[in-house]
Amino acid sequence: MIVKATDEYLALLNQAVAREIQVSAQYMLQHTKMEKLKRKVIKENYLLESTTYDEFGALLKELAITEMKHLAQIMERIYILGGEATTKPEKVVIGNSMREFAELNLRAEEEALDLYRHIIEAAKGIGDRETWVMFSKIYSDEEEHLLKFQDYSEMENEPNLGETPDSEWRSIFGEEYVALLNKALASEISAVVQYTTQHEKAEGLERMRRKKNALEVITGKNKASVVSGVLKETFLQEMDHMEKIAERIYEIDRESIATVDPLPEVGNSVNDFIKLDRKAENYAIVLYRKVIAEATRLGDIKTKKLFEEIIQDEESHYWSFDDFLP
Ligand SMILES: [Fe+2]
Ligand SMILES: [Fe+2]
Ligand SMILES: [Fe+2]
Ligand SMILES: [Fe+2]
Image 1 (spheres, rainbow, N blue to C red):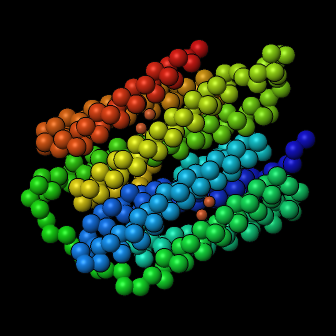
Image 2 (cartoon, protein in one colour):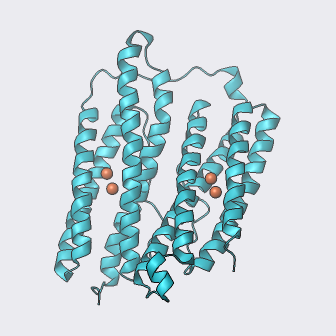
């Protein structure tokens, strides 16, 4: 019998989940904002500065993926312990300069370290060895992140970015249009969280389940594990969409807003997952058609092309979930 987890203990683990969703989105959006910061760099310093921007940008993406992996592990553990993982992140804050990114992230990592020390103690307290070992590993990752952000937060002479002069072509992208693009971004974040959660839940269910027959034991394959694999591939693509949409928003010189909308719906069985995922893809397809129509109307060719590509992916996601309907 695995360790008995109280509601308080599971709530503590869910605080970790909320943090990991937050930092994963935060670092990814900062990564996509880097190009925008870079464009504003003083020309004389360009070569020198652009290397720093590129390095920090690459680091942010790498860390966003690490945080996503932490998130997945913690969620899986919660399901194995019989709990339900939250899909609500802590508030994402992005910042306006490399130094600001680094300072915000430094604080996020410090807070994570505090929380994770607390979790390690609690896990020891109830003899939950798996969780304690897992968080000890995560802890050392976070410590490494903290040190990296520390370097950048001490950076001096970062050029002052100031305001960009308004160009005529940018002014055609009004608030409503930007809100529509941010709605698309929110639906990608929602899909990433929903599919990651379901993927981990399926893995958790799979590990708990007794194998039904000899063939299953040998191949280790059943519907849950096949769907879990599909979910993994799908959420990686949604991450890519999220990155591209946020990049585009920064390209037209607006701010990305990291919300999770609609609220992810996880479900309790593989058949639930599939139904809810078809619904999510359907929502995205309808919304993105609207984006394409607006982009066409405004002559925003690049956004139009981007969403035409994304919508093709969403359609194939829709049909791949449809294949598993009972
Ligand atoms: Fe993390
Ligand atoms: Fe971290
Ligand atoms: Fe997507
Ligand atoms: Fe999708």
